[in-house]
Image (cartoon, one colour):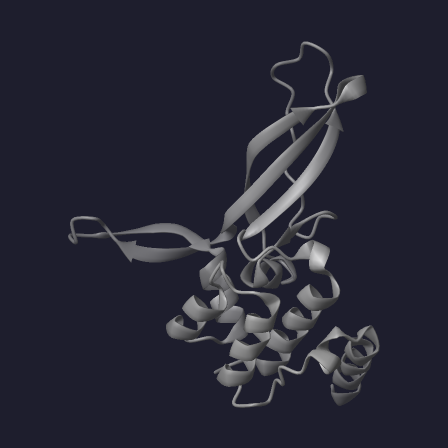
Length: 181
């Protein structure tokens, strides 16, 4: 069943924080470290799941915001800057601390593999596979995300740009949610 309040919370977050939203990526983070010159084996620590500078699509942000979720960060790019500081760009597609059982390629057995960010976000938001496929599409604009949310929620979420862009309305919604608890 659709978790309307959580979907609304995540939509408002990516609306108010466009720097934390990129619908084309599951999750991405940028970290910086001072690496000793000539140290080829320096161990680089991956970012925390909710690290400053982390961002992603609607599904990625949903996973990042869930307490206890550990993302399986991998480091695709490194940039060396002046003064020996290096910038590391990390990405994540999977949840490190959760697995799913899937059939082997030959159909004769099963094995475990990490749960994808898409699967986790679908679970947290209470989406059907069809809804998740439509909502997590990398080509969706912010307006389209709101329109789909309105459609999937049966009108409980309203795709009204005036209401969603206002930080004041977001703060009021958070306060109302806290008072409702």
